[in-house]
Length: 160
Image (cartoon, rainbow, N blue to C red; front, side, top):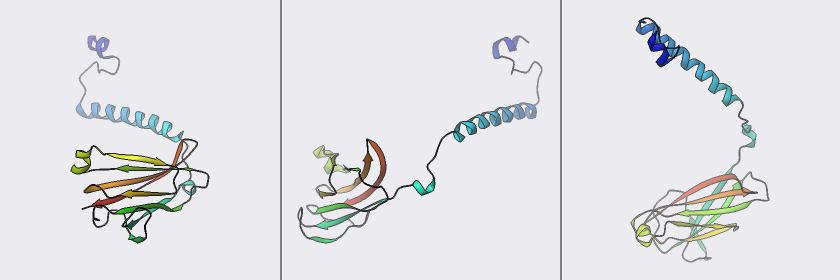
């Protein structure tokens, strides 16, 4: 009984078997799960038909604004340094108007040495980027409306 004043009413007043203690623990977990399920049930999720699609492509060129030489699929073979990539949206289910945000993240030793970890550009339908540093880098395209993120996709670029 003295233990109840320290640990509360859930502390047994007499020795309990391991099975009884385990049963009590399972009952407590079940009650907690039910409470959590009730909380989750209150969250409104978008129906599957409202899910958005966003696809971008990268095309390789020898100079910025130059003639496209070939497509560059995400995370494909490494391209040479000093080439240019033209990124553009090829498909989205997000209706206009929206703001486009391009986010470059540079990785690898050369980018670290140059302290060039990436940058952001907004408002452009097409984004040109230079293959400057050896390593694996990413271009993320995000679509916003009124400051709310509507869609995001990422393209990986490998540079040798």
